[in-house]
Length: 373
Image (cartoon, rainbow, N blue to C red; front, side, top):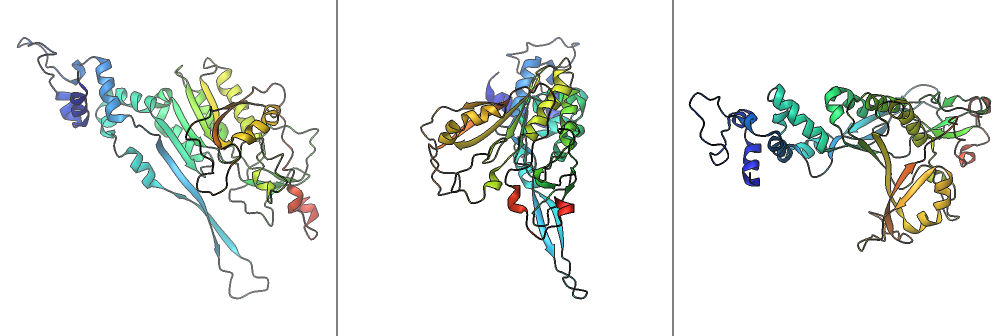
């Protein structure tokens, strides 16, 4: 069946699609008492091709995109000095991006009837990449995985998730997590995950990654899948990678901004071990960490990357490889290249990492030492 005919069929309404009678060249004349020919008379592989034309996007479908916003309220006009200030934090969700990524798809096929909806959903969820962008803190991903239900989770094949460095929270020497008085923390304070063990219960003070426990629920839900179709989660990194920032350029003015601990990928590997590798779905959930970075710096830091537990793959040199960071005039040594990180499997006890080595820059003389140190 030619492509033009398939496209015409895919654009029809549900009723017209089901009542469609193929050309006689494909289906010979039927006896008068034979059952009517419908859309379901087509072979399943032809129906799947139609669903693909109607429901598969050439680019990732943005399920959620948001950004954390912060606004300070004016202090009260009356009262003792210094008058307190309050701030309001919220997530601004860009729903237009989601609508735009779905606009060209014939989503009505998902709601025609039980049979057609089931077949169409298998193609929609199995052939598209679903993206979560911006400051998501893992909650929107968990909510979406629950919403689509067991059958659609079974069809999933590709997720793309922004994996920027988690918000930083201050930890004191008793292991308590508090807001640093000079910090710009945006998220709620989350407890340290119980899988992150400490050496004899001893803690060091400083900035640590503030990771939402909802991250575990994401892998719990994926581990409940009964399908043996592999789902690949691409963790999209920004300008730094987990384990990076320990060997900054001597001229770097804010090295603390480029430090990213290994606790996020370490917890991800632990959850994979618990919820997917220990079941019949062994290795059917794959996590890749992808980003763009200076080719020369990646080559220089290969040993560091290996020692913190990564297997690094650097893309071959491309003719159009950029020399500058996107939106910047800073020339990058060796050009900007793509890379992929795979976490080596963790054996033994999972240990919590020490706080940022640059935490001393946030300690000052008048700080409440009992509360913060």
